[in-house]
Length: 399
Image 1 (tube, helix red, strand yellow):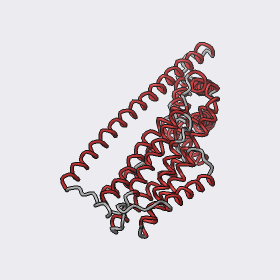
Image 2 (cartoon, one colour; image 1 turned 30 degrees about the vertical axis):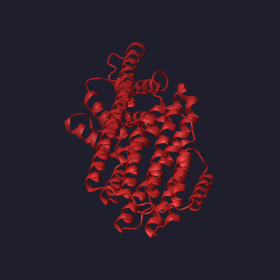
Image 3 (tube, rainbow, N blue to C red; image 1 turned 180 degrees about the horizontal axis):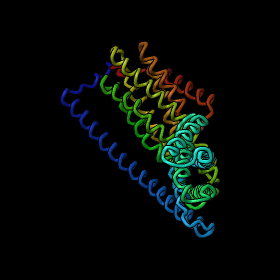
Image 4 (tube, helix red, strand yellow; image 1 turned 60 degrees about the vertical axis):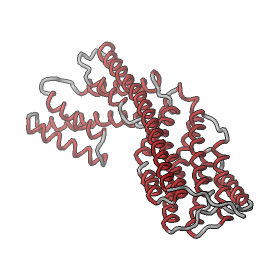
């Protein structure tokens, strides 16, 4: 006789869910604390970089170049440092371009219309209009054009030859900022990427496990929460992309980090594949909602397969931290594909079959995130799924 299905009383079900919720809350709380500590570490490094760059640029402009009031040098240095990581080189070019354009426009209009309150208004209006017309959007160029035009219009009557010191200070400050970032205190690019990836991994792992639990418990609400959580991951994913851009800048301009280029390139490829895994996880959650809503049969190994995907993603994060492929993520992804193949042997309806297809897509994406070539990943997943389909069926695998 086939074994009797496991029965859980309503009270036991409620207690089980409460324990699961409490466990998730504790895990997410620990993850949030770790993330905040990592963010504070990066903030501290950038703050020290800004202070050092400001001091050095002022000293160079004052002591070496003889500028008695080098206000613009530390301003430009700090502006370069606090620019979004990954955009500092572009920010420097934009800053210098904005200063030069502001001087040209300001001086030209002062020569034509003179100085005064209404002249200042006209000069700034035309300067901003010209800058927006050339650049097409707001940003560093436009703000520097406007600021420089104001200074030229208001200070030229009392201070002569303001233009050259302004350009020199901006160049000195920007150069010092880049030197501090590239040579004196360069960020660790791999650490920056891993820290930015931590909340993305945490959300993805947690929501995949929620999707598996929702199938096991036939809980549409929990599956919907998993889908909402995956949809809300975009801000964290955007910060991760910015971190990758910043890390690319560091390994390109900082000699101390050149040896990390190959490791960074692996991380960058992994981040691109991770984005595909997230998209696949959203499809999994959507299809899980449909399967539960239509009351289709759910083999026991189907929730297990999705939770195995979560374990594969967790192993992928571990491999990214230690900087080498242990094979754990690949093995777990193939186990998930094998379990997905077994569910087809045990019996599925239309929406369940579509869910298993998407599970295989996610497994292949995880393999690609480990560095496995695309075709090889697809073949490995198909082979694992066929092995699962050939496995001996169990009587209690459909609830």
